[in-house]
Amino acid sequence: GTTKVANASGVIELFGGDYEHVLGLGQTRNGIEIDYKIRPLLEVFEKMLAEQAYRACEFSLSNYIMLKDRGADWLEAIPVFPYRAFRHSTLYVRKDSPLTEPAHLRGKRIGVPDYSMTAAVWTRGILGEQYGVHWSEMSWTASGRQRFSVLEGVNIEFVQYDLEEALIANRLDALLTPDLRDESRPLGERQLRPLIAEGQAAEEAYFNSTGIYPINHVIVIRKDALERLPGLPHALFEAYASCKAAAYKRRLGTSMIPWGKRYWARIFAQFQGNPLPYGLTELNRKVVGRVASFLHDQKLIAKAPDVDSLFIPESRQFQE
Image 1 (tube, rainbow, N blue to C red):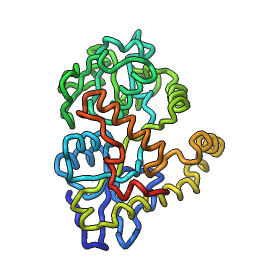
Image 2 (cartoon, rainbow, N blue to C red):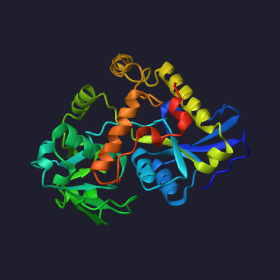
Image 3 (cartoon, helix red, strand yellow):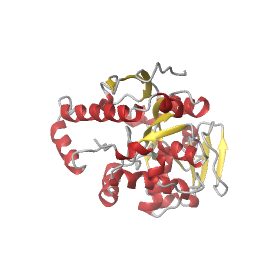
């Protein structure tokens, strides 16, 4: 539910995901005590949209940009991006499907749980950018309650049935989703497969050509919390940066996974020592700008914003 802020040097409840790089986020910075609460993120996003429920939380980057495009002035963001993910592995087809590459999606019906979710925005954008298949060349089927309506000109149908079951039953040609129940089944029992067979190779090719590791989430703060705790943006930025630095130092995971140390070294070299950069670096401006341009192209926002305008003015200078 709704959170409480004691006073100018008070407590802030911060809601977000369960990641290695947020361990120790419950700390005091600039006299502000951060009480970090791990919650299912879809629930956090929905409550924030429906009830403005949290004074500070992790939030969908695409949904934040869409709120600002629609004139929302009750929340602001700082350039902390706690979750990124490549999205070439979000497209699925039936095992016996004749579709084997993105070009085959032209003219096909694609299911997507929430048309406006950042994962879908990135996937559609990458289909156009890397594979030359524009989102408008497909028809879309979305299920359940959508967080946002789309602008005119999108070929989309809203349904109540289960999209994964519909794909298995041949009512859809493909499904765009970051969460597939079929993948939790033993290999021999799976009915679906990724459309892009070598997902990681495709993701590395995309990264090598664009330098982009897609940002999916951003930290937002409600306006009343900013007025009450002017030092909050800096306190949260420093807390996130310090936890991430500690996680990097510990090389989390490398002691548990065979060949983990070697893999860690290779990945960190590939990402110039910082796979999850915070702050409005030139690269982060480029990544946020790219998702904003995809949102505009996909008719989810009326105009592409100036990237700097999306962030609290003083936070644009924050550096790790």
